[in-house]
Image (cartoon, rainbow, N blue to C red; front, top):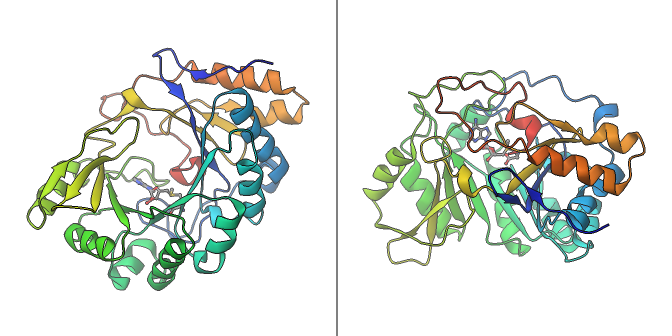
Length: 331
Ligand code: SAM
């Protein structure tokens, strides 16, 4: 078959595939999951490694996917991760591979993942204070994340990016210290606005720390110069002082970037979501397990893009939060 593309009705073409490898996680970040965790996806509903690899290969070989990011839940909890990365990297065109992870255990696995073909990582770390970390994530694991970050840099998984969410009353004044720490370690900090994606549906617009507020706070300590050439990247980048370090601000709520979106998501149970905030999913698992050909699956996937809305709609009065939390979509 010829190559199709994942184009939507608004002319956007998705080339960046975010693959969730599991909905499970070993942290319980307050803005993501309740303390007791969630009811995890049943094993029989979760795609096997071979099924995942088949769908990724259809994306790359038939639908124009050039970038594959592994996420979750926590992708490092997926046993077959090195094999999934290696199979992805071996596809025609050698897609760029990345992983979004909390970094727990990465100290032991970073080198093997790099050897398997992983190019880059984004590690989530909201604070440089271990006590604040424990309050936010409900786990005493700050040092493990710091070790994971160091191992990622050592293994060449760079530029190593750090994702942080600021929460009022917890780490809201920490932006400058976190940025300084990241620059000292040669990590690229990106501060993400808190989004209505938590399983508890506890997001509150008034409590959210806006991109504007973050920029104001950072500007009290650093001189920030906006950098041009953002393209479809979620982060607005700023040069810090005279460089070479930069900081990224992801204003998903107050400065949406949906018009340039090039992303599509595959959940661990084989559903295509054309947006992080989509309320409809398209079931590729049923097609796959029902014996569909690559062509049939490609057509179903391409059709799923047609309902992609022009924007995420968080700011519309009629916005409804999806029943599927971030941990089960893949951030
Ligand atoms: N477990 C991995 C990790 O920690 O990076 C991957 C999945 S996690 C859902 C991906 C990213 O989403 C993390 O950086 C996390 O901080 C962020 N995140 C989770 N819930 C969020 C929310 N409600 N708003 C903004 N970012 C959120």
